[in-house]
Image (cartoon, rainbow, N blue to C red; front, side):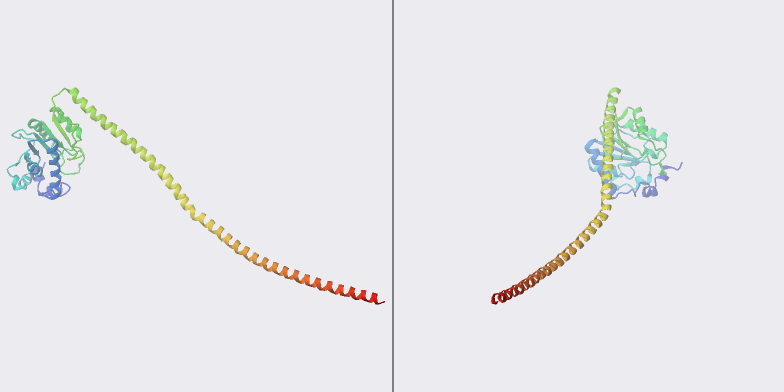
Length: 306
């Protein structure tokens, strides 16, 4: 196997961490946030960053008053640490004796880079030098060339439990990674530890069940909304035809109205003509009657003279 000094060189830190690993604004902000959580929620007086790389977390913890140190196998990384950290970071294996005890040991995405036997020895080593370990090791990324020992969270929990360390189920370590955990030495009876695990399991099970139920309800609501949308879309599609029918009716009605008005005008003309004819007939009838009366009068006059 290639030596760690060769693996974790300038090329690795430029390409193997998702983005170049250096003392820039992005990485300083990340480790500054981690340091804030550690100080606010754990408040150690001393801490060791096991696998510290170029010492960014050590720097942020020291700025916040924690007596922090770092250790890393990479000569390149330790040599690249800020000059203010040179007395607080050193080259070494996290599986080797650490020389002193610490209030807190932090190990972030390190042990998956080590062969299994060395990684297991590192867990034992952490537990021998602290009662409190903030730990994260990738359970997912098998593609990274330096990931020799990728394991699920329960694997690491088992190793810590063998040393009398158990997950602090009330501590949210997701500010590190989604799978991070805080393992602490616990001396109380196993029954109490089981109780805490069961309590947390019940909370998570209940939350998961409620969320699944909510997802089902929302899916039903979405299906109903989709049906309503489809019906509205069908109505909208039929609307042009309906509007065309209404337009045709409107045209017919308009044409009928025009025809009716024309008929009214023609009827008015006919009525006027009829009235005129009636007047004429009356005049004609009146003139004939006068002639008849005059003729009868002349006849009477002749009879009277005889």
